[in-house]
Image 1: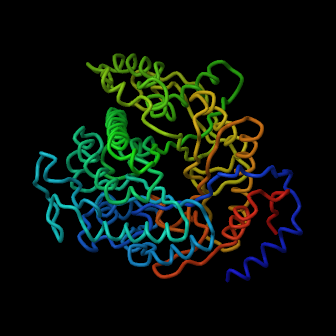
Image 2 (image 1 turned 90 degrees about the vertical axis):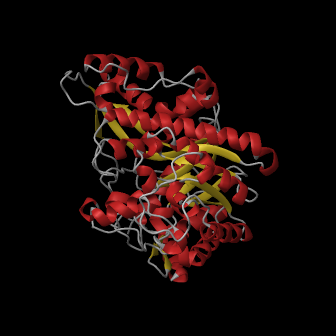
Image 3 (image 1 turned 120 degrees about the vertical axis):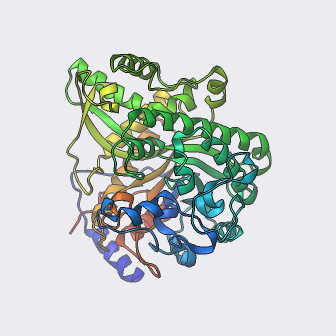
Length: 511
């Protein structure tokens, strides 16, 4: 299959013409890192294996299968818990530099917390192969073997501590709206640093906390499904920022001088384009940046606080809506100092371009982030559409990189996730075009805008469970089931880019 795809790719590479676009053929920087991604719940399977406790997705996909587009779940998925050697073979074939994957908190610390955290030891979970409050040595051994095998093929692990799979026992306590979650998270992070830190040089605390907090607390398409309260969205953000800072300080104070790793939080941001030249639309676009990217990036990379405009808007809106207190929690002076400068690089997950209008809401309108910001977002028509929320807009990608440079003091940027979903076909020309175009814009940013970009991860290594879209959206460079990994044409194209460390002159043409 690999040889056949290589022949197909080379034929079309030689015969392709442009689609109205030349690619940037400047070389990638010598130390630039190419990677791919996955996450625990999306690929591992083994949902009850070896003492793992249930997470919110285990429970919700069984209790409410209708919430998933194809009524599927991650019980087996790619079966990486038992079949990770196949993942290693695919990674070796790609010859990538970095593999971004997440740990399952429920697999490392079943039920989510250690006894010595000094908190409630009672859990409502039904089965306990591992006693409550203990580390799961089988889970730790699985990740140890995975990391050892990555190092053996010269792939750098980029380990994510949390990618949306809250242990069910902790969700029953309020999940990430409960301030005690920070304590549990630090205990878990300490175990990860102690166990894996000698081989891991890149750590991510949280993957895309903005969408996690929004989807779990307001729009009903992420578990627990029954929560519709925008106050909890901001409380979730507040708890996650404090937990992130706690883990960053733990690593810096106790591990960094020995392990020499780097730590950040992966933040997702579209490019918000004003719908017109009207001042109200221009302000609306800037406001939405403030509420999405700025909500997390400003505290970490600027002054330790939420953006001033966001604080003022929500304070005024809270009073107008009759709340006795501000819906946006306020950081103490100690917390501000603690959170400020709590990342070693800017970890960016890329997204689409969204057109934004200014809008005046009535006080009686339901609370929402759009009401707080005074905006109405509408997806702009991109040059390709593949999902309900992803559009291919490479020029917007360059704009967001340039904005991060300007707003956050030219901090080094690692694009920790960038992907394109389709129907899963093996000759996936749309995906090749997507990544060629985005990487070309990235090179424009490096060579023309002088943005410091240090790496790019393709989402994802293989097709897998895609949250509320189930298995209907395919992002992978490989087709996958519980036994096999089959390369797509995009895997050949990505491998060629990595080998040559530059792009072809022309955007590949779909036959």
